Length: 67
Image 1 (tube, rainbow, N blue to C red):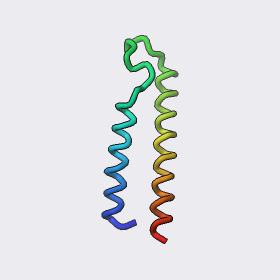
Image 2 (cartoon, one colour):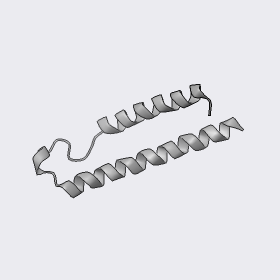
Image 3 (spheres, one colour):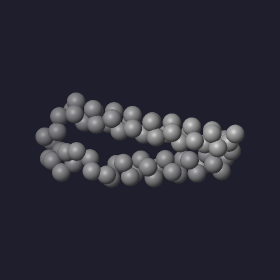
Image 4 (cartoon, rainbow, N blue to C red):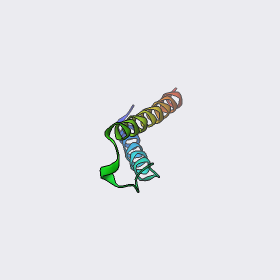
């Protein structure tokens, strides 16, 4: 992957991560102190998995387009 498409991919990924962080996160309007640690960790793992899947799709598309 050349440097221009790599930086473009990183910029798109930053926008995606910010969008996912700002989208309706379950429990955001609840009191922060009342949320339990395992629930927070579970949400974080779920978002990481979602982001990894989307990165995989973008990489597959860019590899396909390069051929």
